[in-house]
Image 1 (cartoon, rainbow, N blue to C red):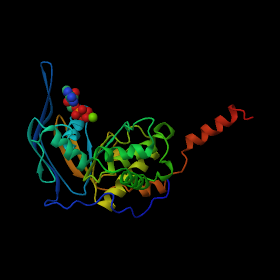
Image 2 (spheres, rainbow, N blue to C red):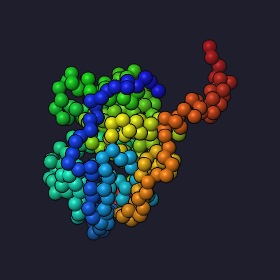
Image 3 (spheres, helix red, strand yellow):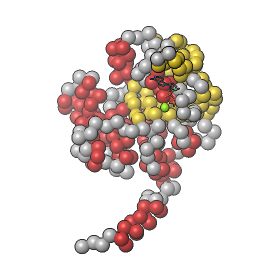
Image 4 (cartoon, rainbow, N blue to C red):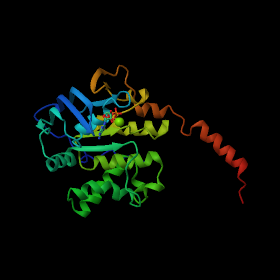
Length: 280
Ligand code: ADP
Ligand code: MG
């Protein structure tokens, strides 16, 4: 990983609020209607997350994890119940008001990175600022700062297809951070990454969470990944089945230090290629 400037202080500021609860979800239901069929994706779910927590959400496919993330991230409104984001009731807001809250307070990271192709890493990170009406030079400055935080200062000009999966996810992470959100939501952020790269991404989440008190919420299928969080919530049938602190939390930086730089398989592969491909 590239050099990480230690002090890019103003990127993610701690937003002072009247309450320590950044998220308060009170008996929220979400019902989808497709044709004649009603799908109860969330069934009266109640949940509080404090500022600066690092939470992993787990649960079987179809249990309502993404629906919950969409509600938390103001992409969707609950059918019933209340949702307070930083003390503000967002459950009754209209679409444009909701979009405004979302752009200011929430950063999203997806399994599939969702970068804009044929657009450089720097421009991808600048996009949320463009939508927010930030001036060109300020956009550039903040996007560069965000890329530095994820260790990609030397990749600013690369297009997504010139970056590895891990690097693309780090660009996506920089894009999620560039607006100084209070929360970062990541739906299966390591789902498409190999083991080492997954830990590298978790290291960035842990560092931002620790140093900047950023609230991090990730959905994951992998038990290993959930151990980097401090709290694991299990969702089942649209409700919380369990909610418990992680007993022996893993430190991603430490795990990386104890991991071989190049996995054994790729060494074998290089050896194989060396034998089969004759070099001129
Ligand atoms: P998970 O992320 O845990 O796999 P989801 O939140 O995506 O679960 O889905 C929960 C339930 O809601 C599933 O039965 C799913 O089919 C349904 N669902 C999710 N989104 C929609 C939608 N936009 N329209 C209709 N049904 C949906
Ligand atoms: Mg999902």
